[in-house]
Image 1 (cartoon, each protein chain N blue to C red):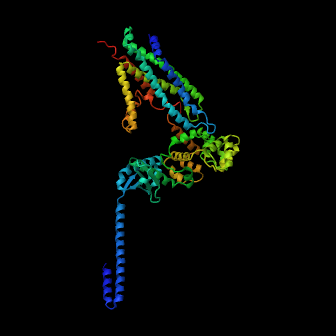
Image 2: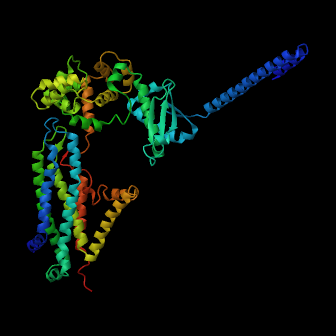
Length: 218
Length: 378
């Protein structure tokens, strides 16, 4: 049963998943483009760190996108067919949901693996100046954990009705859009910042999304 | 005024014995004298008023004391000054320990000046205030401009700390003061993170060796190793080429421009030397901020009396710093390097807490997904 569900989900997400996997491979490789020593000045550590910090913002976004893709797509076919297939199976719902969750979890692995390969190649290719170090394993582990977190959140949201999923995802979009708007009109400091502090505080579900995501760091 | 009246009376009596011309002349003279006396009387009144105002002004000064730090300010601004004085005292005491007693007998005065609107960059800029700290000996020992009312408090604190630092730097031997720059708890200069970034980004061979804790190279980099030809002894060919690329972009002189090209093309290292000599390059491989930090490290390492020992020290800079720190200079450098390492920050890591919390949350969301009422019938 698990293999059938895995195959079913694989068929549904294989194309976007391939794209995410390619991006997750390319991201760390592209981030070390300027890590080659300058012919005159050598490796400029400060510029390297700044570049890493800029590229670093893409990792949690990619992890979130991967989780959203797998979490939502896991239930799309069920919603579209009014759960007839699932109801026809000799399985309680909780078991069916767990099997789907497991299948989605397995599909997180390819993107994490390609990121691992990408960070490994990037770490080997980059000239890391003394005083700095590369962290391919830590970055990959963090990406895997955050992707799984994002997947579980979106999986739980999508497991309800389409309407529920729409309301929750819409609320998230309004939150982010409203945050940007408040920031633009100068109220972000008082409204959205405390909210984000709450969401990203240690131990919260979004904890792993925050902090520094740098392949090369101090 | 009584004297003036008596003079006029005497003048009138004596007038009877004189002819009308001389009488008229005398009246004119007396009138002039009366006007002059009147002017002097007015001046006297004005001086008395000035003295009265000055005395009143001297009385309208509030004194804020925190430990050994005594600060005078106008009563209108005491609310802003008081917390700044306590913050400055705390920062100074933390840095210097009992040596802070050296500011005993010195009174600092804080004054505010509103900057003219014409000094603002644009009409939308908030009104700027200049915070000026003075002592009896030095007017304007530190000045900080607060851009907007909300920054005034912080600016008073910064100005006070800078003022104390400048005052204390004036007490240390000139040789150390010139080498180390301002000595004091100035957060802007005592930024070890900046030191860390500079040291790891410094491409010179000496800096790389200093990073690797070769303390002899640190001494060279800090300019503590006497040298007849620093350009040749402190830098190698690669360093000098980088210096040429960094400091002499386009020399006006044609000959120097050709030298620059040959230097950067690696065809003639001697041209790098010639060009640097031509531009009178004298910088040490490590930036001046490292000297300040090494001095502060020595003071911290030396404990309570370190600053007093530094003031009373003699010999070379290294010997003076050893006296202040009460330890060999290489040990001071080791501590300084430790501080730099400590300022590097924390790299990307999934902490155990984050890992456990994330796994628990994943489990919670998974359970939530299995508990949906979607399939419930009826």
